Length: 293
Image (cartoon, rainbow, N blue to C red; front, side, top):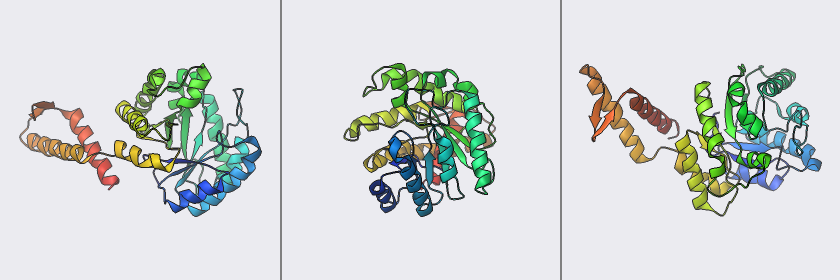
């Protein structure tokens, strides 16, 4: 099942939050085994992830720990995570803090071994690749073009990125503007799907969340991860096509078909020039609206 535009992070070790995710019938759950889980709770988080995958087959994506720790924080227990959670019911995996193409290939090899051990077709599990360090940003093109034989999608993490370079993560996120904009550009150039934008950590600031989601959408992201159920509706509202956008898209496509039948190319609609790239975008809007209806 494809990941929703507003997947919800749920710490794997917290039963109350896992139960809440089941009750709310959330479309996509991101089970966290990494940063939100203390070192002493990693085993409990794995067990919780296995249980939630069983309850919500195909809807759970699991963020594992790194295979190797390159920073002053983190737990190098990714192999244990994979051995526990890889199964036919998992929706996908998320690899954090990817900094080089070689590190990504190492993760892929470990996932393939876990897939074989679980009798899952090698290369069948989707992998989310999180770019959240300065080195990851510098090596982004090579990472995106690593050529993995499995579905892959990038995401950007502002929290670890600002920590890595030692700056404040502010409400307007201006300090992350350059790397944040780079991720969708590289994703597109590498032929990957639209990436997933970073979380917004102030749960009480609905307007700040809305503005952050709008910035991400305008940059080319395909969705934004949530850390609280109350954030999901705002993110979905921003990322899903509005009624006006769908009406506009249908008018563009219909007018383009009429012009094409007459052997004409670019044309004006409501005083604006419409050419092939705009028609392609209009078709994408209609497709997205149809898929999420």
